Image (cartoon, rainbow, N blue to C red; front, side, top):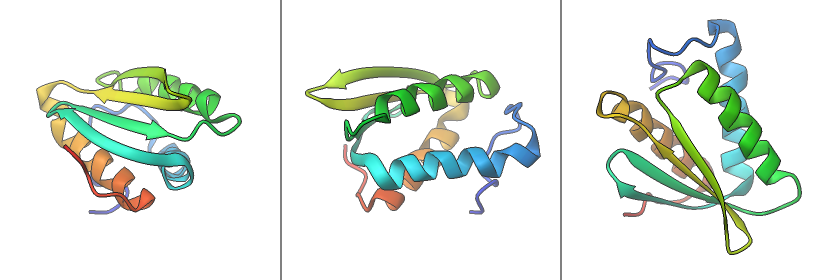
Length: 114
């Protein structure tokens, strides 16, 4: 699957900006993702290192992503000093979440955990 192939039609981010946004998420995942799990089929839980500025970076990306892909629900919390990012979607957008989880796990060198 190409970088943009999994982006849903409902995304309102201008097409020319999509590669830049994907690169931002990719960078975050490859640099800071330490664990990934699927507590439910329509939810993924990402645990990121609490390095300086990571929480602000996660909050900024989640806010901007929600502005163009309102089907995402983001919940950001402290998890014993790490940053926990829960991402949920409705059943229609589950394939988008599946692709995001697979991409994140691959970039971080993690296997998807249940």
